[in-house]
Image 1 (cartoon, rainbow, N blue to C red):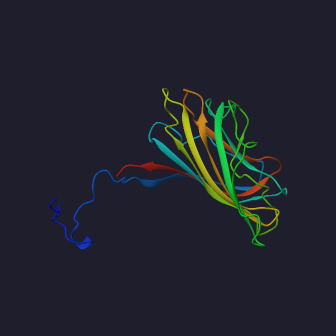
Image 2 (image 1 turned 90 degrees about the vertical axis):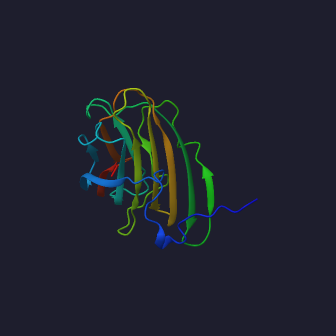
Image 3 (image 1 turned 135 degrees about the vertical axis):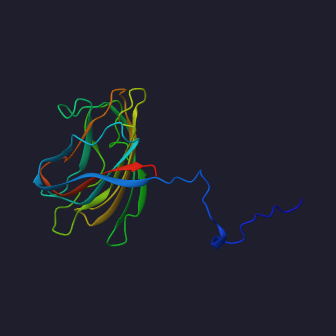
Length: 203
């Protein structure tokens, strides 16, 4: 069989990328900083302008020890945060003492047609001065009135038991109403930290 030879002989000769490669870039919509706050709610900026939105969490620090970071969605501009969700959850953990290195599906953390807040930091987040959570949550086509609202979250936290815990949470809001607000809070108590809202836009 003859070899296929391309005209571009090296990376330096390539003049254009294939069109199938995504070229979207992040556009900052807004940011909020919690300071001993009970919750942070984004009630503007989620609209039909973009198909994909991304929340980025930076050093989310609880005022109460051994708590969980969570979120919920709203279809009425923040009057209620009670979208029905079905989710899937797994996590990886590793201790500072080089013990407890595991990957596990967390059957007690997922939701099945529940309106409860979904935890996205799966493990007891510590409140020592150097302990916090960082990560992201992507929300897909929240303004659709045809499809459910898919989301994917990836976070890492420093637990009260001195573990690094990476949590992978995904699922969908089972509604064909437009999602136009999102709230973040702890399972108990207040928190500090910054949350950025980005849109992924086409060039």
